[in-house]
Amino acid sequence: MANGSALAPAPIGAEERGKRLAALRGGMDAAGVATLLLGSTSSLRYFTGIDWYPSERLLGALVHASGELDYITPRFELEKIEGLISLPGDILAWEEDESPWRLVADRIGARGRMAVDERMSLAMYRGLRSELDDARLADAAPLIHPLRSRKSSAEIALMRHAKAITIEVHRRARAQLHAGQRASEVVRFIDDQHRALGGSGNSFCIVSFGEDTSLPHGGEGDRALVPGDVVLIDTGTRIDGYSSDITRTYVFGEATPAVRSVWDAEKRAQAAAFEAARPGVACEAVDRAARQSLEADGFGPGYSLPGLPHRTGHGIGLDIHEGPCLVKGDRTPLASGMCFSNEPMIVVPGRFGVRLEDHFHMTDAGPEWFTRPQHSLDEPFADVPAWPAG
Image 1 (cartoon, rainbow, N blue to C red):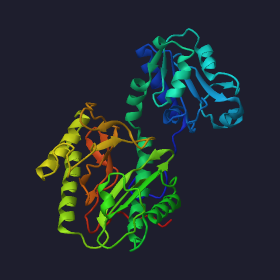
Image 2: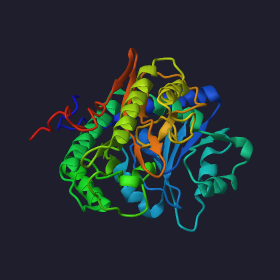
Image 3: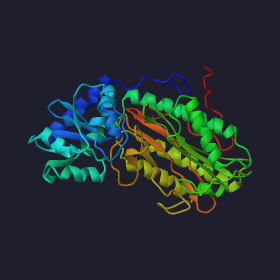
Image 4: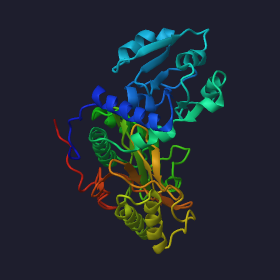
């Protein structure tokens, strides 16, 4: 789907989720894991389609290598869960004065080892340990991450649409900037525009002006925009749970030579990272390529400032930040379907920062951009396709 399309792709359906569960069970068999417990995390949505908020109460699912699927819910949520289920399975309900961990232990009996969703809270894990010995518990991450890290064509289409919405919102946000405007006003505008274009609203939004742009996640105040300020906006939305996350940096008014020089170096570093992303190459090699580019322009070395204080990129999907990541030490080989941010920010402490963030997905032939990188400092959206009027 081309960047700028107004029609959202189809949501993930039961057929694809069924294939995910089949692949998960294959991995469980190979690892000697009989059951896998999913909590109220993005992995519950990934495998079952149920999107539920995390709380102190256990609501999740038990995936059995033998083929069964059980849903676990507080009894007072039963009717709601029944309406959310799209894949067949039994429902195990527990009352407020009962232990959900006893329910889990009784259900799995002596079947063997159980892998636990690594995104569940420590409090929940402790509850589970009160009923099951440590020797029977395993980390589910090695089973889940390889599946989630390689996106299907349907997942990529949803993210492409989410990112097309966000880049259009970026364009609209710049067009309405005016002197004296507070960062919080821009955040509200961006949320309204994300919703107007069919997104979920802001999944997050950082709007920084002036010196605040030297802080990777923005300042704590609500700065007013003045002519000559560097503007850094980092935001995203979701479509069927799949995320966008795009950053643009430009100047409200005339850029100084120093800002232009840093912006150009940032552009080169982002391009170097993209060129280094080849099938089979380790994730850390992409980070290394960005840092080598920055060091050639006089920044760093390593995480030293002025320079790049964080990783070059992260995986993205149902979670804004997923593994693997483009960072030193992550030796995961790049493979088709993996999706990453590319954002080797340059921080000049106490003055300003420049971050250009776009995302790419891996194909058998190499990386492919979801959105076109920023055109230029002075005309950041010159090549953004017009958003369809209809």
